[in-house]
Length: 321
Image (cartoon, rainbow, N blue to C red; front, side):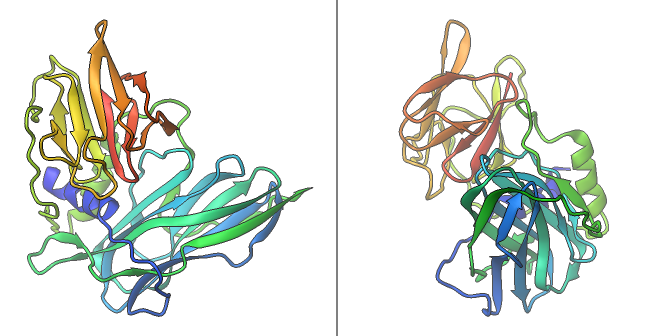
């Protein structure tokens, strides 16, 4: 199961963002919208697009939005054979990932994302990151190199005038719900892992060695249930569990940390987990830390089972007791 789920982890959490490119490059991804003026209550549709001379077997994207102005509804791929993996959504960010058991040629729309306009405002949608996935020479799933990012921002103008909700025809393919969870999300459920297995069984796509191994000084993965643990869903340590058998637990890009994250957006000493009165707490050390989408800059907050923690732009783990 670990080797099969690694494909999705690869295309979700591995990407290279190159700016000042255009959508005419040989391998490129960009964001677009057919219109940018809407009324309150109307449905907004934007598209993630790509051009690739090489057939792909998956893609991923992250689009940021203002939750005060927009509410995400769903996303669906228009590429035949592309199926989606439901992921825990964070407020202010659409996180989409799709994969196919067979290579697909793409030259146009990869996916449509739908939002509802909540009120009158001037706002932007921004393509924060994206990647195309292929099977490499070793037969493993890997993000395609040399892919450039074209247009990353769509500016929207939403008037206060009440609009009419239009009835849009359903998009063929796997539709992903995008509503941020009302409560703290748990880890990816077993039925979602089942989807991954079903999607990739025919493709015989194994795991991959995308990131070089990072040293873990004092906190190591283990099977003991006597201590809480953090389970990384995104970032350099994606797919790994770390038992908190030593606290405080320091997290950052410096190899001397208890959990090392080799990521340009992670500070050398980014955050730490500590205990007080038999409770666990997360402290931000100045690197940009979020719990369930809420920033805790240079402060600490209690950690509860199921809390989703984001460090920097992309590293993400779930706290489990």
